[in-house]
Length: 84
Image (cartoon, rainbow, N blue to C red; front, side, top):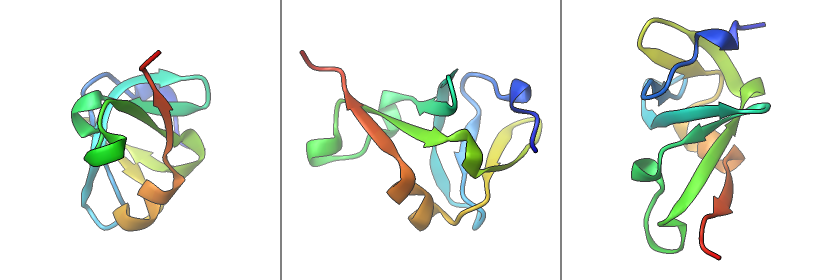
């Protein structure tokens, strides 16, 4: 299992294919909360997205690498509206 304590704010999250998935806002329980800047377009705008820690393959000095390609990883994202 990967040492998730190495995950830091503003690290880039990339898929196994090297494609940008998002930027770490913080680790929230068993998932990574991505910044709103990587929140998507349209109906996804203004939502925080989350990636399960179970998808992490490796954490190096600057990036969080996922075990899934970026196009697959985004299908695992959970979102939460910050609007009341």
